[in-house]
Image (cartoon, rainbow, N blue to C red):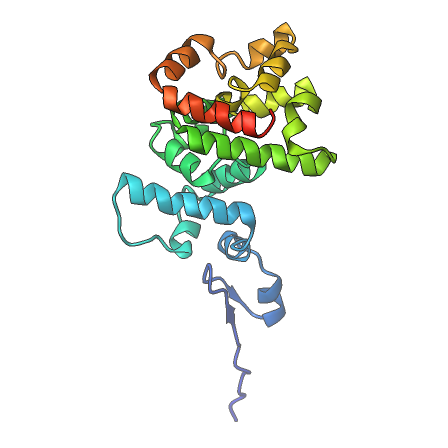
Length: 232
């Protein structure tokens, strides 16, 4: 009489097609594709995925949006996720604009996380944006500062530390449009030491802003009006 052997049941990983004899083994199994699948909802991964999608939209003019599965299987997955972490940590001004900036910059993907590239973006933004956008962003930042420090927002220039103000100006949170066209803004600037002035030198470049203000007198008038009405 033939002896019947028990049928061996195998379990397969849907991500890497790996075979396992026990369901428990499959459950604890962690291949790279499964790890990427489980990380899908993480903020920096989603940011990396959005950048991946935008990259193909811009560079290859693809109307069809890349799926997350395509992203997870891409050889560039780790590089885009690393950039996603950088964006999440830096919290750049207008993330969508920054993504487009790096994609069209001609800079290699593995260099996108360099601080110098973000500084170039901020400087470009500050010097090319319209006055309304610059004033709106500056006032919103001052309001947030006031709420955090229990001060009226329009006392920002009078009470903020010079160190904090230096970083806010360099990061584009406070625009030269408001800083250089308000009494308290210019008074704050006069209190900076040489090191602080050097740090924001390219941002408040006097020659550049003198020329820009000369070309856009109505915008200067708007900035001064906002400053006056806000008691800045």
